[in-house]
Image (cartoon, rainbow, N blue to C red; front, side, top):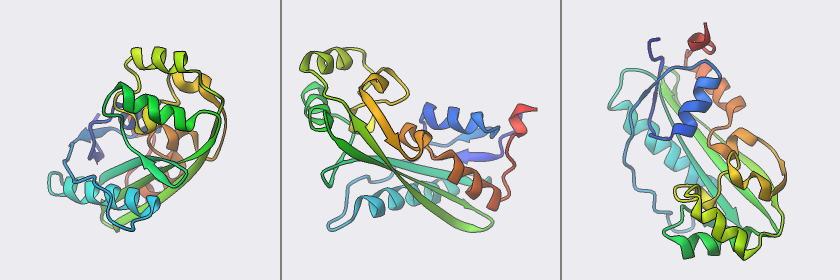
Length: 193
């Protein structure tokens, strides 16, 4: 298959999600400053990062470029990727027994300009015991995940329910992504034929 989209990310989850809707990608990881800006809301933050990634990728490829970013927001605070075991334990402890939001923004640069959408999903987590947090960290799964957990992995047992897009919590809101890709002239289902 010939790539029809440049993915400005090395995320295997995003690559797999795009493959699930038949989009073959060229991987073009980019490096952007992910520091939150003063007085920037979580939605502004993820939208800016997704846009910055798409625009940086556009310098590397002639294809339309998709950038995305996901943030876990608990009590108004953005939880990034854990630095170490202690940090992951703190994050999962804060999420335990509460509801939080996962915001994922997707930006696609192409013939129609830069198109951006941000999706918010609410996630309810059950109480997570300290021993479960330690055992989960030992799996290695939380290391590079926003909020220190992967809903598509073993942390699924911590999630009571969600309200919104499951694929957005994984890393890419597929409904909105498909709309943006079609507006940029990227065909869906092509890698499946």
